Length: 218
Image 1: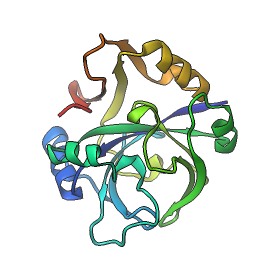
Image 2 (image 1 turned 45 degrees about the vertical axis):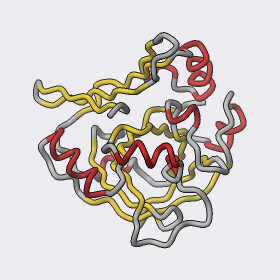
Image 3 (image 1 turned 180 degrees about the horizontal axis):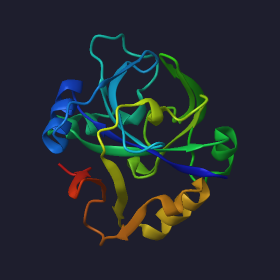
């Protein structure tokens, strides 16, 4: 199954907080993305290359709550509490050519496949019944684009590039097996940490010799 890293996701309690976070980190104002009617969320997006991008997402308090839990675990009390401490790298996403087949072959349950749309963008996404992320977000959200070309090619590009995404986890062998079943073992770096230490992720972004790290830690 051919899959690849699609985008990284920064979450915030409010979208403006997420935009301010990126403003301080990258010295830029992220353009607005749009609203996700089926999830009661909205986002901002920017390209990190021709087929990779950065998404900042938050619950949209002006929209009606969805009939089911929001994606990215945004209804999870622990996630909400963590985001009150500030925006952070929450998870990442991969895209695949056949999401239904990937769901069947995955070594970890990915949930059900649902059609999604934002403006003229259409895609499929695998969602759990309770909204939780695979592997607590250290494993990716899985999607399949249903558009002629990757949406990153139509996003504002400020020149930042995703140099690497590393997951620091105390179950490295398990993570390797899960990522292999998703076809993306080589898309991220895995670093084993000792038990008793919290797992975390770091995305390294570079531009013109400058490097910044986006972390899942506060």
